[in-house]
Image (cartoon, rainbow, N blue to C red; front, side, top):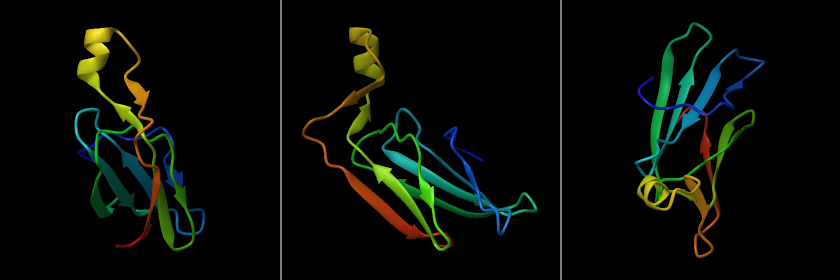
Length: 104
């Protein structure tokens, strides 16, 4: 993998596939990766976001992946300047859900 990974990866119990996602702290992208039971990467999708986000978890169904995009934004520069938590809620931000086929 060439991206960070959330602690909440998912394993499909029927197929043995591993589903991963991660958001780097400095780029507005969510990276989605699917690894088959033989440990081979079979799918990778970079998903553009409006700003760097702190996405905590995601869902898988039989046919789809659901990734929540909430206005919990990451701002490393602000964190360093204000010595605050890296994530902050943007009250003007938009909450949305991305739904895509597992095998896109």
